[in-house]
Length: 399
Image (cartoon, rainbow, N blue to C red):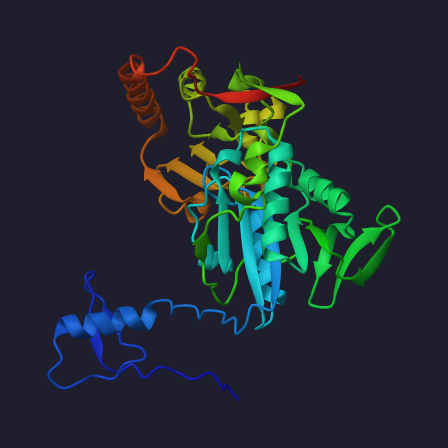
């Protein structure tokens, strides 16, 4: 027997702006209610309920999460680490998030109860010793039971190992499984699986947990605790044995797609390849392509984005004339912001895109190139001689 509860089609309804009838869910009709009241009830019925806040009854225990931000945001890997700490935290455990850089994300939505920002250590600044000092200051102030960090190749994994060595702490790396009692990781070159009780430092691999939480944290922002007394934080006074020589300009076309932060891709809808490549140079973006565009001979095979090509994780990915086959969507699943330019409003890529421009690709490419060119000319007088756009590489040498 079908146990699915059916909605009575004769329940009260309102006429939406589209002219269609919408049954008011979760609310019964009230005599004398206006259409505005009914519409508000409709929105409440379809809206997302606010998430409950995780309550910490006493600060008897602390879990410290540390990670670098990228232009004010944590990447998905770092979000997963914060979520892991929030999930295993009990009512007597507080989750403290230490961010190297600024954080514009909603800290409460990430699951953090307290947030400490260190803006001077934001990327691309290369200061591993100062980051280590800031982490030690935070650990000395909060005395966490455990420190959790992303095990990545962009600084957090190295910092976690350096901290564990300096503090003579037990550490587990490349952790792929975690709960309140144990952590687990692959061993013996991936042929076996090992578990142990929680060590003092946990470096979590990507995709070990989901970053989506059914609750929120307190999200309180506090200043970096100082372990240097009246002289200030030891992070600011750490002596360096190396010199940071800044960044060197590198043509975006020379950057591998897997490492590019800004990519524009062409599909079958792009007919003027020269104008497309000129736009990429104007924007300082790397060039990608769909499988169809590569098969047609417009681009080399190393430019193909998708399951059978390159998997990219750019901050901005603009797709011109790409319908969005499953293979291509697989290749851009880790991109932060996806912009689609397509004539077909029902194309699969529209569902993935954060912003969709329903227009012909060629006029859009020309208009965007003109707008960017004019903007650059307007800023030319105000930019210092060394300012530039595009991709950068670092030069760090011993002092």
